[in-house]
Length: 493
Image (cartoon, rainbow, N blue to C red; front, side, top):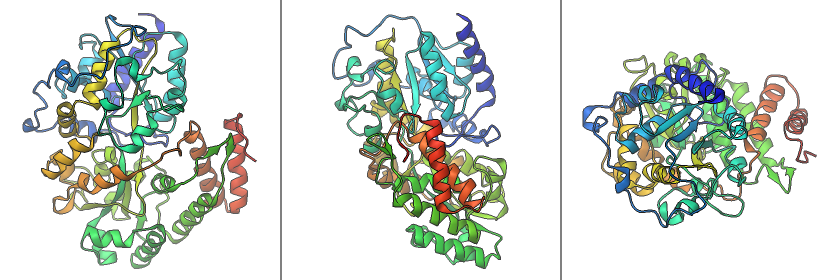
């Protein structure tokens, strides 16, 4: 093992000991963000969830559509898998290999999983791209790695960094029931599949039902959805909450969460013909969030801070925008955890707009020397419906397979009692997101620059327009300056 691998292995060991669920959102996660509850939930699933029982042998999964291409390396002794944190990969490996969810993290840290090396880079999601590029530049062993939605295309569109999955015998027919938006992100500019996701990250608006009844007279999710059905209604309801609570309660926990939802309403790509696109959407967002900011409708805590999460336990925040991966993490923490001040008082609605938040795609390095193992790992996570169903229940996770999720939801599956217990009247929270996951459509809207452009836009609006007292036009000028600084290859004027 050379110096780089030793370093990465050490980082993995240290980070895996201290890092837990933070999700895969596009914003940078603070080091002090709540990260312990979801991994604990995943590893403490009840015995009847069969987390201790070996999963079906991956070799029994449905056969791939074709043989592995002769150009793909095989026969390597170790399948090396890399990701920026250990929130998902160890449990995907456990499901594939038939290992115990409760011990797999330690087993991987200690090098006890035969034939598998997991590199946990121990960075935030937005830093992973740079870390991958550094690793790829060294020529070190790497077989499978994980890319986040907003920057996945910079790898998927580069044949030197990602392998076409048909080289592994995997075609569209291998993944017949994946959600449409995940399908788009997994393909390069020529429509060639380079990546596939095991998860669908549809989002909704989770709200404190006790506070909603106190300040809005709302007694059901259906009534609440009417109050927040579009952004104009959301602002009006936020103003109502502020007034009736004497400005002590905000409807939304942060502008960061609002941005995650609002950004999915964009109908024009951020970059077209190498030119930055600033349209009515930008002004609509700025005016919406300013109205919320000025009336006290959105709390001013920093996203991912401990104050942001703790606000849910104080009665000072009514709701959080949350995605499928967040229910066992920050959303449960915002209730105070099991037995916390607001645990069990929450419900979920779609909110003002269908949206997704984050999501991760599995890709394969062209220089893999473990093509067969890489294929089998992908099949286990993203194609084998029996394996995916077990993962959905045991992790738990909203897996990227409409047939699997429809079956589990219709059976009123309790995906995890600790997470489900946070919802008032036993609401089936995944059922609420099912149609959203199926209906999200971003065909032609995603570009390789999205992570940078979106972060720069949000920064300019927040710091210039909301906090700095500048005009909208001045904030947009700052937005252009930031993009020009960070992406020198596109026209910002």
